[in-house]
Length: 136
Image (cartoon, rainbow, N blue to C red; front, side, top):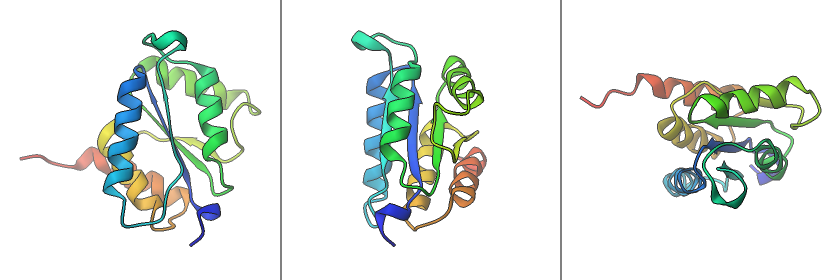
């Protein structure tokens, strides 16, 4: 499947380093599949902690290939920032979805699933399913 048809993934964290690291981890674990467009959107201007609507908007635009954009967030205000952007209707690509999933495990599941050419519903389901991963 061509990259043009892959779901894009945006990872929104309060920390640029966390968002970038999780993006690298997820892409590394999906290395056997197609190159999924993944963009971190972490922190605020000047390297400060927090969330930035501008960074989220730019990240979503950069990964949009027409198959949808899945957005995963870490904490409260990141969720609120994405919800506010979605409510504005014209800030994010048309088929952008906030995915309720654990940040690290959900990001890995989303990217690995998107690498198979799965659609946005399947990517969301895989990420959401990560809530059930047991470690013991």
